[in-house]
Length: 154
Image 1 (cartoon, rainbow, N blue to C red):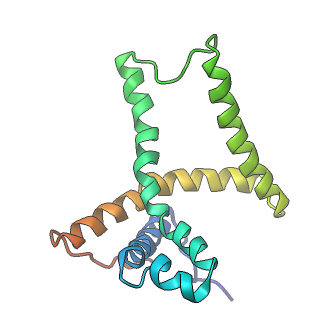
Image 2 (image 1 turned 135 degrees about the horizontal axis):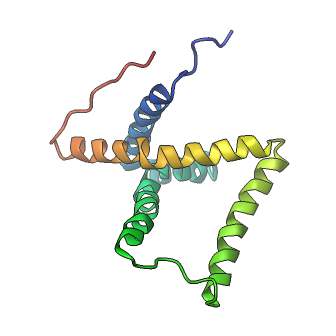
């Protein structure tokens, strides 16, 4: 009954995600945004919607985190502490703790490790592609430089 309701290819998924992201950014900065307009009317649920609407902004640090270590490696600069350094333990604790907490939350909601791993991969792919391009397209259209087009998915 749901055949044809969801995009089937990665390109279609990212295109649809970009459209949704532009819509979230439009709501986030409109005069009817979820904090000023929604908080008095729907209460704490507005904070959850605002958190979701801010996801596209995460694309900037995520993209930097994805590319700066590779650029530093090419130039011979160390971006992470050496294993022999005590700061490495803090870095390892934060990295493993954040991922373990996310995995535990996923498993407690009856998810599987494989689905969690695929979710992590899709978050990274979305963060450096559709979220980033939606932020750029929204900024350009807000400045009047570009007009947002509508891409039809299969």
